[in-house]
Length: 411
Ligand SMILES: Nc1nc2c(ncn2[C@@H]2O[C@H](COP(=O)(O)OP(=O)(O)OP(=O)(O)O)[C@@H](O)[C@H]2O)c(=O)[nH]1
Image (cartoon, rainbow, N blue to C red; front, side):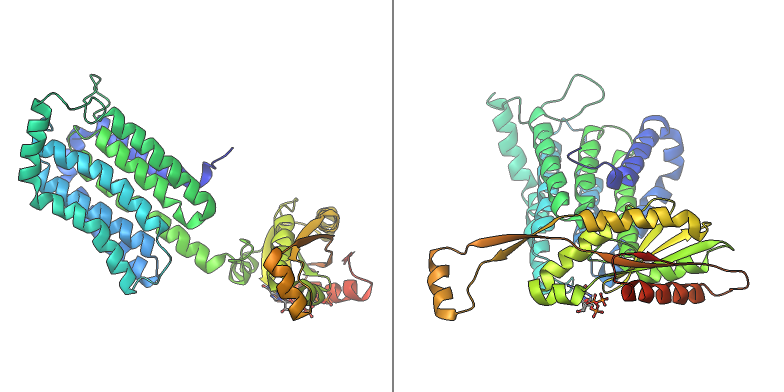
């Protein structure tokens, strides 16, 4: 599949639930309207505080965008959509919100308290608030435009069906924004929120005629940003940035929750320092990613971790040593058999010669290398209370694996 669905599931569930509320629970919503509204504002403030604390500018901008839109809808769009001023604002929100969200997502990553973030906010807020100042004159122009009969169907048109209240042009525009958003996420997973924000906006505009649509979708939007912010903060704390595997902190917590039977395996990339020295740190990082990805595929219920540096660990809860060996051997051979292609600029050592060559073209030489790891495994024996003792045993056996010539599993 080109785009993965899993990262969006939580957001999609929230959007679908909000839809269900809108469609079927109007009377309940009427009774809860104030709570809905204030919960939305409460979440907005909370998420803004957390985004600033965790330095997440994209989340803070999304909050401001959704918050301002809600304010504008509440104060200027509580009139029938047949009114020209409502149509102007509706269309402008429809177009400007996704564009602003895309803009926020592609601006260079700067700290949240950097002046640059204020500049970005001005770029999207000025047209958003400016349209209010000019609403009357734009509405007059828009009415004349409609009266002239020159308004193409694509610009603004109500569908005859009860479900869709939008225009063909806006739908096409949203599909394009969604596609761009999904593509951006492929390059930067931290932007998972972007397609969800665009989808939420599209659903809001299409169900705009339903009672409480803006309040429910506002709360849904706040909830989505808050949940994803928490998820991201969790990843920041527990996941290793380079390999994506859970890190040492996550492993320590897993160790504390183990029962009476478990096996721990420690593993270390062989001669990794030499690798780094020969090919450079970046290639070293690529090796670690490749190794982590193979370790991440371990079977037998093993939980993989990056222990630190070029050391990894696998925890097998509820498993005796004998049950894990086949899985550890599979990981070891998968790494040994992986042929890694390394591209290096083919630059001569000699500086003058190097300059001449670079002026023409920097040639690249490719080399296929294979990486190996050594593994030491130990299970908990009766009487051992501290998982760190088992870890020490696994580490000792790992040392034996290194002594035994590396690229093997010892226990
Ligand atoms: N590229 C890269 N290198 C790292 C990272 N973390 C640790 N290292 C390097 O890993 C190397 C570890 O080397 P050693 O502990 O001497 O072990 P080794 O060369 O693998 O030798 P043996 O374990 O005896 O096979 C050091 O050069 C560290 O700088 C990282 O995140 N990226």
